[in-house]
Image (cartoon, rainbow, N blue to C red):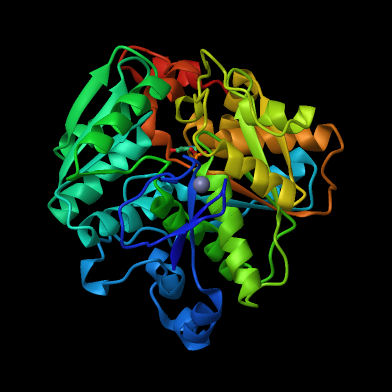
Amino acid sequence: MRYECIGCGRTFDPHKKLYTCPECGSLLEIELDLEAVKEKIDPDVFESEEPTTWKYRPFMPIFDDSKIVSLREGGTPLYRCERLAEEIGVQELYVKYEGTNPTGSFKDRGMTVGVTKALEFGLNTVACASTGNTSASLSAYAAKAGLKCVVLLPKAKVALGKLAQAIIHGAQVIAIDGNFDRALEIVRRICDERENVYLLNSVNPFRSQGQKSIGFEIADQLDFVSPDRVVLPMGNCANIWSIYKGFFEFKETSIVESIPKMTGVQAEGAMPVVDAIKRGLEEFEPVEDPETIATAIRIGNPVNGPKALKAIRESRGTAESVTDDEIVRAQKMLARHEGLGVEPASASSIAGLIRLVEDDRIYRDERIVCVVTGHILKDPQEAIEVSEPPIEVPADYEEVIKRLGS
Ligand SMILES: *Cc1c(COP(=O)(O)O)cnc(C)c1O
Ligand SMILES: [Zn+2]
């Protein structure tokens, strides 16, 4: 195992605590020795293990199993959604529902590895900046590990459920008068200056290693035949890269034959990566004041933007933007046709699919998986605001019947 710089290609010792390339400052990626991994894979283990992120242990970059911090993340359902498919006009649609993770979002898959790494590095504090779910997840895993946790949030627009989680798990929560991108700058500086604090933002290359398990599970749940396409929201863009990497590693180790077309969706008010794909740019241009109802992807300067561009281009996928209205409409479709409650960012994958189908940019007979990233209860206020309020009547049988109509 090694760190490898995605800019200059230099490699570094994975026993050292690094976030970005010490030589050129680019993002680092963890590269495993896949030949060695392949030898460790036991087909029977895939059958018998509990379905968590650790089912795929040979692909996880951990040296010491006794340090593993797990809340049994992963093992989320892959639903075949026939009613939704019919509504949208595609033949075979699956939804990977990440809301059943321990803290209600896929972030747990990355944090189980990230917090385990903090223990392996011998550190006593973990930190992150967050639009909400990263802090909710980190504070829970820090609690489980017995580590101190510092969380920086933008003061405005953190969804209620996420804030409640960060606070109840005992993190030190600091709300700054600025947006996520600013909070990240500050927390990165703290972690650069203090040796005992481990940074668990998207720049951390180990979180992505846990999130690869979304790709592993999708393949596993489809009997090791990759779908044609995976559609998901992009914020800081760690997840699209991670899922791509999961399929890539399964392909390299001969577990699957192909990699799905990675298809990323952003909200119109925060779409730097979509813009770069559409204009064929080498690098994306950050968005100054990102704005969208989908707070989890309200990101103007995505840390892993370069990796997202690579995942999309190398898998011959695409990217699309959607409006807030389209996101809300998709959120309601999922809730009402399939019984799945998701937070707005998650619904953008469905909204993106609808757009791509309408524009004939997706074949209707493709086997498609949409990843929905977080639970509805993360952002209850939004759900209430976009819905009809309850009908209020006197506590009287006749009054109730009158309102029910036929
Ligand atoms: C973090 C998050 C995203 C965005 O994921 P990235 O890896 O930052 O692109 C999308 N939806 C939800 C619910 C999230 O918590
Ligand atoms: Zn470098």
